[in-house]
Image (cartoon, rainbow, N blue to C red):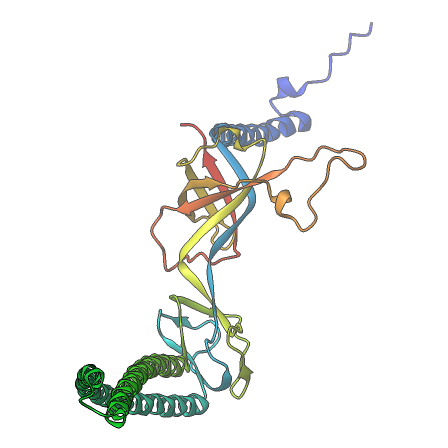
Length: 368
């Protein structure tokens, strides 16, 4: 009689682990570590996601923003040939610093010409003064002659009246009467002639005085021309209008420049601001004075502070060369952008200068 065969000893009964069980036990720590890493990553992602959501709810952001600033053109006030250029590209300069020298020899000749003209006008005034003195002396003599002629005329008139009475009585002859009448007529005529001479003398006085006034006006004009020539002479050295950095230099020694021609530009570092072009759907909750966080593409991780100063009076499309006309053709609604001016409130940082034209990201804090 066969006995029942006993079952094969199992791995449990023998205490020897099977290969599958060992593999499962070895894989459990890896899965646990993976779960832990995923949980930590999820927690960190959730934390930063919540922070980003909170930030987005409290701020309006845009990356369509640029740094603007004062860029002052340097213009000569006189024409001439450039003799020296005293600065280099991108050099830092201060206000009133000499930049360019222009040949001043022609300006010196113009000053000499104006000085000669001023001296000629002064001589004309002196001549007019002399003529005035002569005219006044002639007028004085004429007035004295009038007095003498008036006395003579009065005497001859009295003699004529007496002789008429005597002639009526026959005391004098016709000849005596004729001589008395002729003397009275001559005295009267002489008096009238001297009076006319006096009037002419007075006219000469007025003419001489007018010549003096004209000479004095000419002196003032020539002096003004001389002062202007000296002023132009002072413009032979072109100076910096503001403090900043030399940019876009386009001149060389020996070049002829015209008055008002742009020689170079100076970009200010201190007076800069940001113009951010926000969508019209973003500006509804923006107000003047709201705080702004600014990030420049050039300085990763660095933050600038600012505030909203003003809003543009129209969208950027209104100032385009060819503004869109929604009344023509098929209408397609496009969200417009409104320029917002943002001034910096953080102090200037020499290590992180903002220059006009740099791209920045802005975030306006619309609520706490």
